[in-house]
Image 1 (spheres, rainbow, N blue to C red):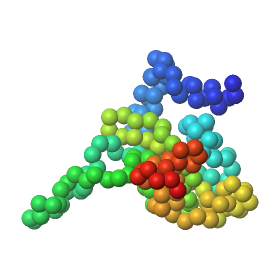
Image 2 (cartoon, one colour):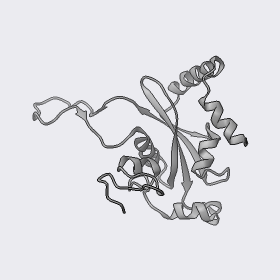
Image 3 (tube, rainbow, N blue to C red):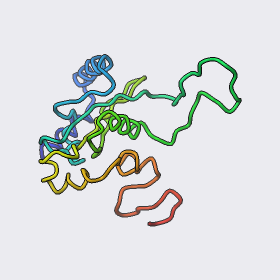
Length: 183
């Protein structure tokens, strides 16, 4: 087995030592801001699978998203129509919401991808891989230069989380639209 397979297997194991480690991590993550830039990815195997490279111009950001029903902010006074309900049914999953929020904070970067890190009863954490659009090392890399040329990937449904939200599966065998039509 290669090293990334060992890393992946360690994420799947549930020994008491690992549970205690995660409990301590989540306690500290709850105190951190909701958007936090990191020096190294927490899950190196997933980050490398999504295209992460340890070079300048590639950024890792951990984003916290509230779990549960998506709710509108409370209105300030006055009467409201019966159609104005607090509960919203959004078509976005937590991962795509995290990607969009990170993209709002880092305007000069594009979202390469994201992956799940942890969750508790109140929050879910995702790490988002960003690519700086104007960095020379990114523009010199063929794999990252194509992503850097695209604009608003997280908002146009071009990341893997947004493809799942739109009802599209990954390219390959059995790629179908949500209505059952092939494209």
